[in-house]
Image (cartoon, rainbow, N blue to C red; front, side, top):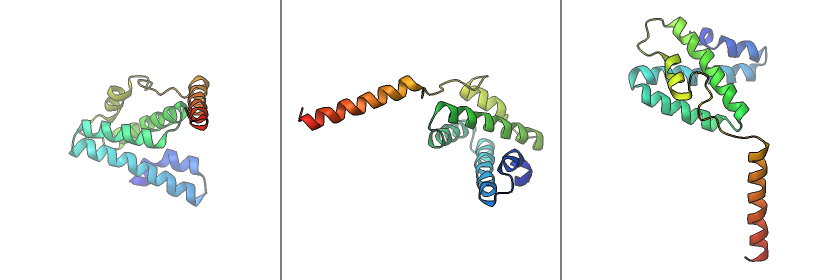
Length: 130
C-alpha cells in the first residue's frame, strides 16, 4: 500500500536506490499525518503539517513544492481510502487556503538583502565595540 501511495515520488526518484528510499520515507511522513488526523484529530494533523513544512522548507519555492506534494499525496489518500473519516484535501485548504498560498513565507531577494544587512550591521557594531 505504501508503494502505491508514494508512487508519484518513486517515479521522480527513478532507479536511484537512495532517492527511492527518501521517497518512501517522505511518503510515510504524509501517511502518518493521515493516521494522526483520523485517530487524534485534525488540529494535531495541521500542527504536524506546519512543523514538517517549517523543517523541510528553506524558501518560498520549497514551501510551494511541499504544499503541492501534500496535495498530490492526500488526493491519492482520498482515492485509496474513500471511506476515510477525514478529508485531508479540505484540511489542507483550511490550513493554507484554497490555492495553498496562505501564510507563504517571503524568501525573495528583498528578504535576503534585509537579512544580510542586519547581519553586517550587527557584525560591524560588535567589531567596533558599540
